[in-house]
Image 1 (cartoon, one colour):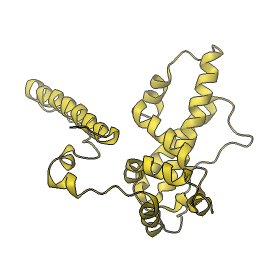
Image 2 (cartoon, helix red, strand yellow):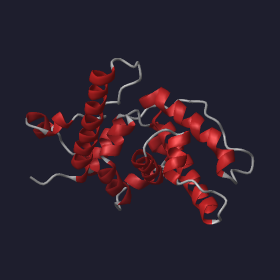
Image 3 (tube, one colour):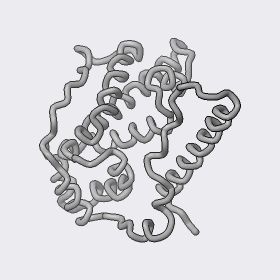
Image 4 (cartoon, one colour):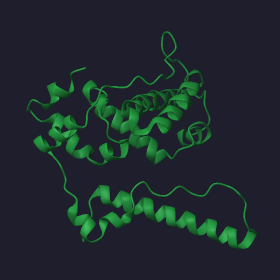
Length: 209
């Protein structure tokens, strides 16, 4: 059986969750209740990859994907998020409060504002660049992973995905109106990238405001 990269990500995420879940169950057995939050379950269960559920899945691409996205657009909702400082950010320290605040908004509103995930991904791209500049110049000692754990509290893998999605989607303002979940859009990122790179009319359509 040959799995796609996307399916392998689902499998690995489920394996990681099960490993952490086993640790918490052992801790519960040995130490009793602690009241601490348990590990979050995977976004997509590995069960969808097995049997009839997997067979029902259809990969949309080209015109079919375009029409599906068009049908799932809505007027972009105004979600108040912190705005960049006048003149932009020159240090990671000055940018950190904005990154934390926008991530909080993105988690709260979910699919109600897919555009917030794009904005957050762009912030992470800028933060990554500033971290590298400060690291290379000797002004910063911590790693990117450590900074993320301290301030954003999400995995480096998830942040990399957000940065990649922002790079893909940000040049196309009309995609900000999608009312789909971030997870669903991420799963069709390869097909979406091909759609936007094709010589057809799709690129111009999604470049509209």
